[in-house]
Amino acid sequence: MTTPNTDGSTTAHRHWDEVWKTGDGRADWSTVDPWVADTVALLRDRKVRDVLDLACGVGRHAVFFARSGFTCWAVDASDTAIEQSRVAAAEAGVDVDLRIGPMSHLPYPDDHFDYVLAYNAIYHGDRDAVRGHVREIHRVLRPGGLYQLTMLSRRNHNHGKGIEVGPGAFVQPEATDDKVHPHFYCDAAELIAINEPAALLRAHDEEHSAPGSFHWHCLFELPEEAGGTG
Image (cartoon, rainbow, N blue to C red):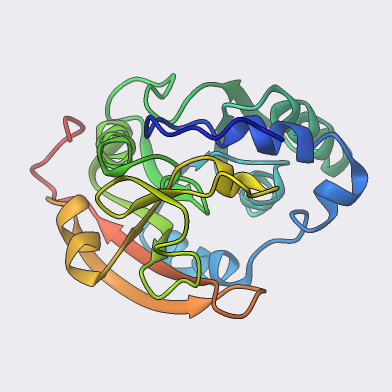
């Protein structure tokens, strides 16, 4: 059994690095999420050019954005994720700038992107870690930039299970999946507070594939005067 991480740091990529090594593990994460695909019309309307797929997994959204005509970068802390994303991009015949790096220290300069996607990513860790991930998104976005993310809701059936390693953050020592690593859950008020000074444009709380797997689905916009300092 994997030793549980109770220090609140972001370590779930260790689990996913193993998942991405198998075809069965990659299969459930190879299809573009419709919620992400539906955002393309807005991105084109906003004249978005440079996009980042943050914690890109096996590259499904990065390849989708590149095929949709955007200049796309993608980053993940998992070596295997980047290897598989490289294969996916080559098979699709598109260019994606792929890099290995943590969400806490993104390997990009300030004010570099028009849009960032963080799908099932930044809630890995305790509240302080999550705030750090948001600050990095703000830093690399241009003023007025958009970012789209999912966050674990407190309606999620895993909220409150296991050991609380910080306010709203839990580890499940007996888990056989990534819940052995810290996961942070929030309500609507904290969702808004963590993402300040960005403005919430859209949000809904819905289940993913499993019953009770509620996640916030959000679209935020940085203020024009904020710049990339977070």
